[in-house]
Length: 281
Image (cartoon, rainbow, N blue to C red; front, side, top):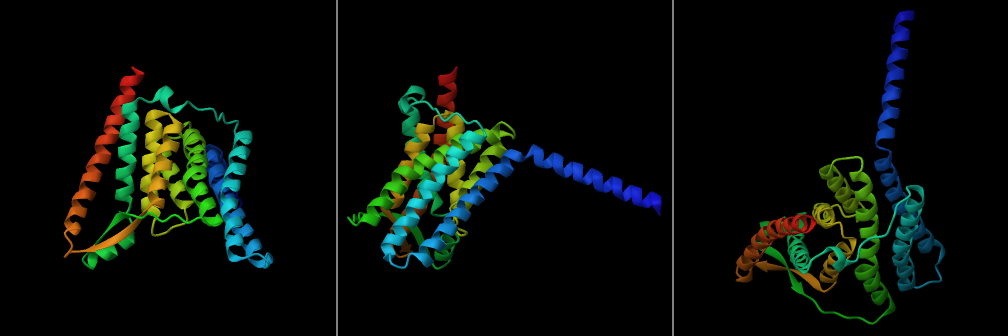
């Protein structure tokens, strides 16, 4: 009985040591998961506080406060991580390390990726089963109320800057120092997708996260990522998704557009990879 107890104690000790060793090995990843969880939790608590305690504010005023909380939590998280992990946030200017050809290919890449991501959610296949194809269409709707102006600034300008600094400059670079490049790209894209809080859109956000992170891995230029992220969000703001029935000629044209976009993403990524290698040699 005593020997069995000692064996159980030894197994338990080894298990604890292995757990501690695993936690130490993955402490950077655990930190980022905790950081992003804290950001979401903080936004949720602020949301509850504003909704329940600030009854004297109008709906638009509450929405404006909640909207502004998002970039504030990003800035706080970036500054906290900079201090705790000793992160250097200086990065090269766009034209200092990227040729005009790389920039043009990156623009084509992000436009085609924007088209593809529409087909990467459940809604797309639900409509397809009904004989309808979902595809983007231009939508120019400018409203001059305060909320829409702030929303546009946060979405199109602040969002790309803060997200690229956090996910690509900090998270991806730190993860790539500990894991393989492929694992780091996938983990970064997963965290990026989770933070957008969309179950149906998870695969689409994951795909876009892969594109952003791989582009940054190839060019090492954060300004390029910020620029294409800005372009992506601009497209999202000035387009809408429409469903085209089989009787509409655009139904078949849409399939050609999707197939062409997939091919274009593959070709532009290869071209950017080739151009960056040529520039480094």
